[in-house]
Image 1 (tube, rainbow, N blue to C red):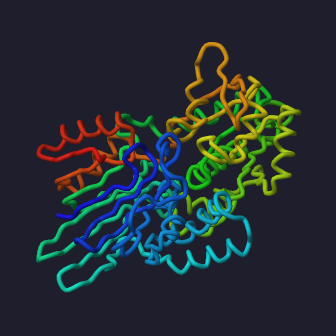
Image 2 (image 1 turned 180 degrees about the horizontal axis):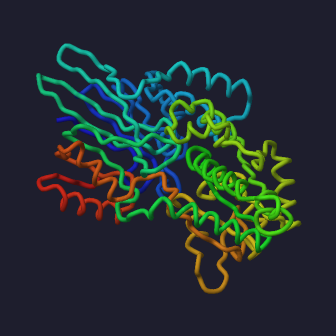
Length: 470
């Protein structure tokens, strides 16, 4: 039976990195992610943390930093093998790692160019649903197949088929599984079978609200911002969540414009909606959104129908993209001083860095404004502190860059935008196509989420062996 060593993704929801040992001297690495927030406490900065001897290849499930952020350290440790990923991930990975390289290592153009050239040499795009042989030896064979995971564009779960001594074992790594109903992504299909399933458990302890509720709540929040003459601040990850938000906002504005008949233009909420700017303040998100638009052949059919109708699901008249740092500062100062209603989408998603921090510093102390969370906030991050302040009595303070700021702005969490499957989705995935996984290892989740998912799986599938990775 295949053996797995976990080099991350066991203390919480970040740092996914799993080594599949094919024999005593040969292995594959599935993801090489960065631990973030409280998960990173005590982890050596910039170090890989394990020996790379015998690793034949890296297989990337998707390009969020908690799954790819240690790739520079992998290179520094001497890894020179191929990096297998889906075709969309092959285009997105250089953008994500270039941004991380500039932030963490060097902005020197020559250094960045050499790094990107080296990275491009390693990347091998794979077509979804097709087997690829990675290891072929007299008594050892391993092939992998990528299947759509529905988490973000290009995300995949990995099926590994290992044949040794005439015995075939199938191991499945879920990566991050998406919630159903993402309008940009084709839905995931569970695998046919698995002898061993390594399963994420981010939302193993909860069920998501119905997807339709999120649009109504988003519209209500925007109406509230218009009435309060405030700004909605949305901390969002540059990849995935931002594009889904833009898609939803375009549809809302499109239908508002259809309702906006001439008699109503002079007064009422429709006029204010038509003037409401949506500010995308993230250079990385802008570049990623451009790639998303180019890769529309990977979108769900309903999204491509909008394109055929002449609409731009990820670009619309009221969308303003901010490039330079000078422009960013001007926008922050303008919104702070004028009180003009606006929607700002800025990274990073957990408020631990990026341009969202300057907006928070400028606006958290003003009750006209609202911070809207649309994604998971890891323990120990500023986003988690702000999110927990919702409904608190009195004023709560938060430390941003060493200075304390009062939280007077409204705070809300908008469900339905989760990029992760809930407990029901995870349990269904483990059921495969009617042939439930024999053994399951739970990773990528808090202790409570993993334990509740373990109980749910054992209650649903008699005889399934479930353990929590450590």
